[in-house]
Image (cartoon, rainbow, N blue to C red):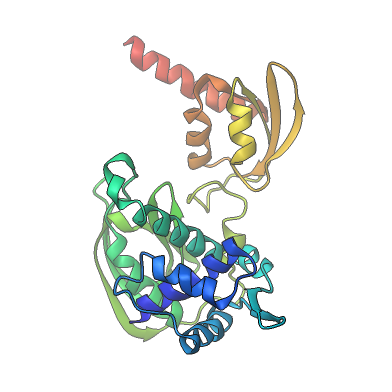
Amino acid sequence: MVELLLKRYLWLIDTLKRGGEMTYDEIAGQWDKSSINDNGSALSKRTFYNHCQAVARHFGIDIECRRGRGLNLYSIANLEAIEENSLTKWALDSFSLGELLLGNASIADKILLEDIPSGREWLEPILQALQNNLQIELEYENFFGVKFTGKVNPLCVKLFKRRWYVFCEVGKDRKRIFSLDRVKNLTLIESNFIYPKHFVPADYFRDVFGIVVGTTSKIENIVIRAYAELPGYLRSLPMHHSQHELSTSKEYTDFSLRLVPTFDFIQELLSHRDQLEVISPESLREEISNLITNMKNRYSE
């Protein structure tokens, strides 16, 4: 029931976000055609008003009514509330995409999607633990066969490259991240912990690319040079929030980034092959060069 109501709230937000000002009849008409209205129910005015109140209460999104001569127009009064809340924006984008795809189920064989590895089943209890500051007990084994079993304090979850991760306190002043697809078992414990007062997940991961944090490396001012069509890709989907375009020419474009050059970031640089060159710092340029040499030697052998 809760999941169904949440879908209805997201549907109403998405409908008004795309439609702008709409009458009640127009909104009800869209509901009649919605894929989540699987029983063909009508959207009564009472239900519509209740949904408007719930959207304000749960999402901080205000739906206002502009009254005219016999015509009431409804719209979202504070669209910035969507953009400023990354979780709401992500949920809304995902819902909108789901609605679009379900509306085209007849051509499902022509819509190719990427699978997310197993581990999704652990997300619900982890979110419940985060909501109530509850401990969880993990049984975990990484790809090297190293195992971990114990109670942890979950601090946040993070999605990166189609995998879900949970970031936890595993002891005093010690933190660790676990990939959900490698969790063997997870149990929610009715034992509360005190969430770190000054810990802000977004700030903790702000200066890294990916999920590797806590290295001894420091933040670097990095300049990369992009060739061929790569500049366009980097403009439309920046590697990192600190990315800034420095200069461009017919042959290449230079970008600057400010972050810790962790394993995940270096992997991302290498994924762009010969269309990307590290200009500075020299230490990172040399590290990339050594990796490329080692790769070449492996093929030579």
